[in-house]
Length: 266
Image (cartoon, rainbow, N blue to C red; front, top):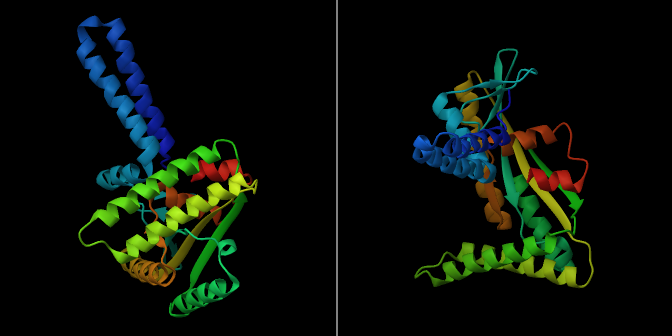
């Protein structure tokens, strides 16, 4: 069974609705019903927005292990995917890559340099690594409002970092790139250019004689990949857990066929 965050969100919403109804049906329990309604509403919103963080915490505390019908095992922490093949354990991890610059916005010389950085980063990795990118045309409906909001959020992060007594140079550069990216997208929309979206993730796999050994090995590889890619390309690389990890795992077999489904899964 896969623990979808929507199940938790709908369950919390049902608890909130039950509490709200209790306020009217049993006036003597109005206070308890109000607390229950507020709790359900807050938890429903929390699972909907931050389910990828909350669900792994719940399964880890409850020590819930998921086993798929194809033999894959997702441990309670939901940070790796395991499989036993002829007595050898394979462990896989996924990393999300947030890229704030497009090659179309660079000069030919800058693209050559950027490609060289990527090749050097990959060539320094001593194990097999899979880099996947999903590209799609964005739906223009409500897109401008979203990117204007993200542009404002990026400007706020940049301003806060600049105000620090000892600002992180790498973070400043990254935030400046992010702000420039959103400004560029807004300018393109103004010119009538259709916006393109992309989702990039990295997958790595390691083996071990036990689940623990395979997990430790793949986490070591993931940490090396994270540092290598982040430093070489100055991008943000984050480990994927819970539902985000499972989405990437599903995409190894079948990708979302429409841009609407891609955006819903992000």
